[in-house]
Amino acid sequence: MLGKSSVSKKDAAEKELLNVKVQEADVVLIVDELDLERREAERALRQARGDVVKALCELVR
Image (cartoon, rainbow, N blue to C red; front, top):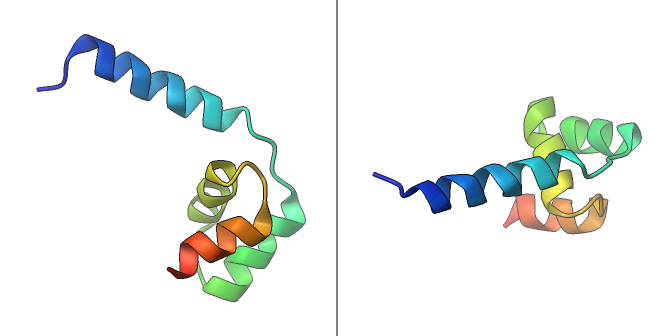
């Protein structure tokens, strides 16, 4: 069972990711090239802070 502080840290991290803006063209590129679902492409881009090259590199590892 997770402690209250670890849950709130996870929630804060998720909220921070949601605030990262991603370009529609970058999402489409990742979806088309890697045959991923849109939500997976968006999450990868958010984790890479919108950097499409970094997101692609992480996804192909």
